[in-house]
Amino acid sequence: MLPTPSTSHASFDNVYEPAEDSFLLLDTLSASSETNFLRERFGQPSSATEGTVDSPQGAPLIVEVGAGSGVVLAFVNAHADVLFGHRHILTLGTDINSFACRATRTTAEKASAEAPDGHGNFLDAVNMDLTAAIRPGTVDVLVFNPPYVPTAELPNLSQHLQYNTYNPVTGNSFEQDSHLLALSYAGGVEGMETTNRLIEQLPEVLHPERGVAYLLLCAQNKPEKVKEHIRGLGAGWLVETVGSSGKQGGWEKLQILRIWRAGSPRAL
Amino acid sequence: MKLLTLNFLTCARRACKSSADAFPLHPRDVELEIVEAEPNPSFLSNILPRLEWPALVTLCAELGLPGLPGEAPEVAELTAGEDGKGGKLAEDLHRLLLETTVKEGALVCGSCGHEYRVKEGIANFLLPSHLV
Image 1 (cartoon, chains in turn cyan, purple):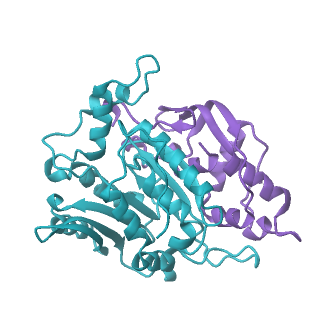
Image 2 (image 1 turned 135 degrees about the vertical axis):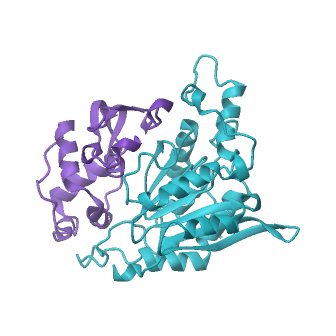
Image 3 (image 1 turned 90 degrees about the horizontal axis):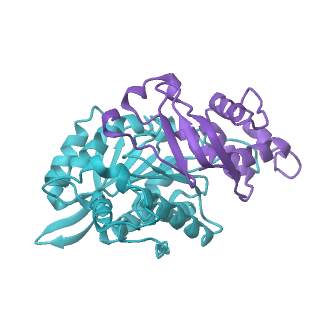
């Protein structure tokens, strides 16, 4: 078991607290089936001692969308050597909630300091909607633990810019914190409204050959329907359930999809 | 926010996605801060293939930082020398990409002119609803 990053510095009044879904991502990404997949796809960094480049693709970029407390991104970064077989990875977090961005940065930096010989290179946490400001085609591994709970409506974004800023005089209001927290879980119809927007962004943001995404779903999201949607993105899109937990009445409560495109990355 | 991060960011506006002018973003009135990081030449050589070199040269010029060579170096140059540390070029790149951070200021899109604020090292790419 690899150590779980500490998030004790985060305020869970307005940032999602690591829960069963976060831990399922940690378990899945560090399971041998996934580390084998990642090492095969992104292993063999260039060797400094020989001065040669075995892998002209360079350091893979790992992006967690909606990183929240940063526990998943910090875990991937801190244990780069175990997950990827080398430390030469770049990690970047995004979140629509600026408080989450600050939490992610601290979580990632603390976890790196506690894994001095194995961590990758954490870049930054950037405040944005999903992948809005990520340069197209640059993401090698995308991780998303979405707001997946079915709700009557999505948080009202017209007030987001005000709610996204800390008020040093009065502190955060209850409405403000409720809004920020709702962004982390409220998924609208079938819990899929935000996830569907992310799925539509995958063909553009993922690297055209190497890109792979890990997406967490709950049973109410109708995972089989989501898989069909992903296969329908175009020729060559593949999707597979690579992690699951919490059986309820015979149904997997949570599952993690791996989404990628056909083709041998080694031949690229 | 590290300067290396800017290599992976562009304007958040949908309409700018296809514009060559939306990358790189241009720094405006920025306060830079050096945050020391452990040098790692082998890591630098793995970052090199990811860099949009002309964009990095532009960024350096706009920030008034010491100039980079116009052409991207070879990976071997970053690990050259008896100690394998690549000498001054590797030192300069390490300082530029991994230690130079934007603490405060703005990043401006060269296509639409929209200005994104950076506060306490965190860049804000959220758009008012009428621009989404």
